[in-house]
Length: 118
Image 1 (cartoon, rainbow, N blue to C red):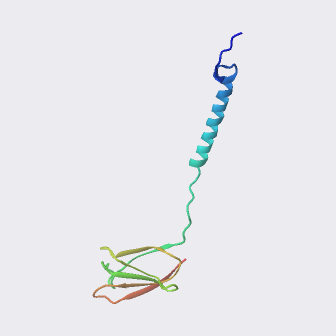
Image 2 (tube, one colour):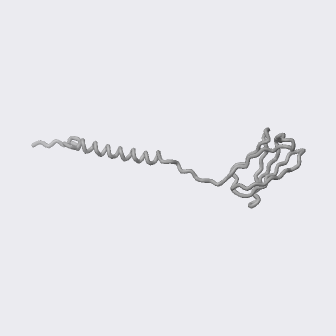
């Protein structure tokens, strides 16, 4: 009698079992990858608004470089900006609440408007 030491690879029936284990592992890896990478991204919801406007004189001409101040009248928070060459200003990321908007430029009277972001 002769004994040949060998690995499990040489045993009858071991190849199909190894193939099934490999396929099961591969399917599990693909399913996990699909779960991790194909899910919809979650985005935080924010409550904020943007105040955008145009500063113009009584004749309707735009006023560039006008100083615009937006004040939350409930909290006292103040944000400032300057109009561009077209008289346009924009102040983003303002929380909801009541606001007073002041615009002033050299040679013009100060003007105040109010609005509520909700």
